Image 1 (tube, rainbow, N blue to C red):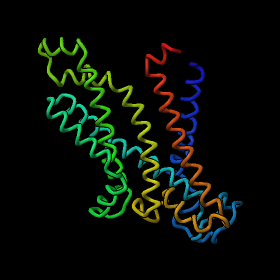
Image 2: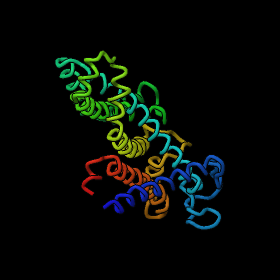
Image 3: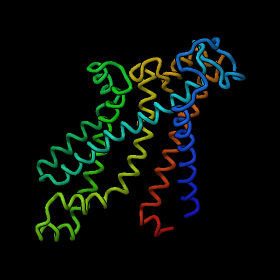
Length: 272
């Protein structure tokens, strides 16, 4: 069982690492300029365009490489926003009194039920369509999910006898949070945030597909899928290339989350 779980983590790291490598390479080298439209329309994969060109004559390999950068940036940005705000809100809710805790919990349930797409539309209406607006909307939509999990974990830790002893001895709440709460909740939070990273990547692709994400000439995978859907039969590479990379990235992140869950959960290690 340990070997299977370790291979789960390694497999996820390899898949995720491939996308990271593509994104890093795109920072220093690209086959063509992302806005270069001189390659000819809908050229089949081959030399010198290894993945072919899109309907505007842009090199698809260049587009998907830039898209990897956008996908990773969107996932990391959304997780940073949702993780920081969500953990802070969860800790505050966990320390709140009963009536305030009930009110905040009800508010979190309402926020979780609020559609991310609608939130994105509101953010875009206030800020205009951009990658930053999409990341902000996805991150804000993630806050309630992370906060509710953090609240449950914080409540569980605060119910322990050593926390009662620490409070009785006069230990301040800041010391309790940093010395007891965070060290005990971070393993579960790391796994959840890894899963949320994959959700954020898919959400960014969906928003870009609908025209609410990164505008042209930014080569978001979601926008590439939207632009290529009209030529999917005549030039399938325009759909296959970003679609496969999107699946690889999300699958890699989910495998990493599954591997981390098994590695960080002592009860699972004990059963193994």
